[in-house]
Length: 349
Image 1 (cartoon, helix red, strand yellow):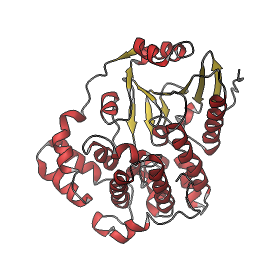
Image 2 (cartoon, one colour):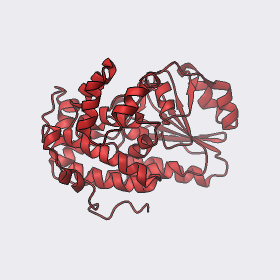
Image 3 (cartoon, rainbow, N blue to C red):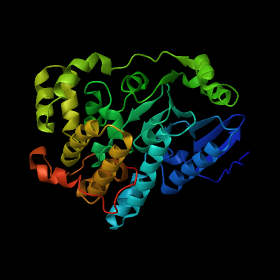
Image 4 (cartoon, rainbow, N blue to C red):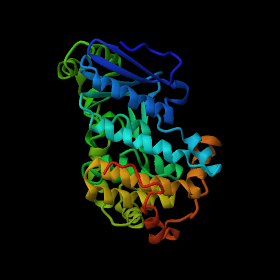
């Protein structure tokens, strides 16, 4: 049995037939660092090789959520310093995302509370994805001058209709029912039942334990908006999407347009291109390779540093994007974000 290290940002233990991984940076909402990514990968190696482990269970420490994503303050500092540590972080992180998706044993992710960005990457590629009434699931990258990554464009490209495009461009968080609708989760469990569920996985078959605790999620919002979401976001350009949203007449569509227009224009155009290409690529691994190329390219542009400053560091919520309008973002600039990765990529395909 593994000994739990209480000083670690990733705690692991084996109880009964379950291997448990806990992200343990609650003060930072369990934001991922490169050592944490490596620790999770190492734990998966151990649990996969251990014949006594039948299921892996991922949870987050604290009461606020599973994981708020990567440590974007550190990424911003790296960009300001002209470094490239973020490339190594993403390389390890995206490889871990692929590993989780192909893991040979049930991988149960408890997506309670805030699950954003990199938190989606370590949970929504798993085979058993559990949300609660407290879940807030999002890929909010366009709001910080970045682009959905960690396999997020793969997941959102596969969401029904244009719901994934809506979530990707706006960066809005969804609750349990909408996460289930979009294919980001599989099961709803009331948060009060989580201790019993998590403990039960140590002694019972996954399906049997889920059967005891799974319930019906409270009603969501997206299902009632599918008409305007599917028609407006089917447009070929961000400008046309915004135009359709503004012209539709539904107040929710207008609100979505207003949200989109606060996001980084470059991020919006690159995100739409990435989603459309992800649909064609199909499998997760080539999409992760594409995301790595895009992430490395966007890292060198001004909007990431500015977006994190405005939303996380100084919190004035007033980013000054460059370029400042959709019209100024050229097709050539978007295409440059899909160029070859600086170090040859992830080696996944």
